[in-house]
Image (spheres, rainbow, N blue to C red):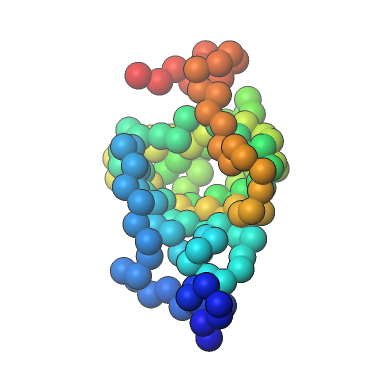
Length: 141
């Protein structure tokens, strides 16, 4: 069913129907975000990070996040704690908590991320990778 702004109220997304966002170090495949459906307070994205790529230390001031690893091995940071996660592993990140994802494997790191609320105060992501203590915890080229 489609409502007023031409975005559907609900949405099936089959492989290949995602909205693709190509970034310098990874690709995002958006399944759900405002504008793709009538009204949502969720963001749902599948991300691909090639070997050696990362989403360096950052936080989402007003959004919670769950990351679920589908394929590959990720070095996940939650503040100053580091864990290596693989397929089937997940991490919950409260709003405002600094975190990072590094692909440490030889294959593409693929994961799902769910963030909420999608409609939140700006900025939605704050990069802190050049600030201490984050830049010293995990130096990056």
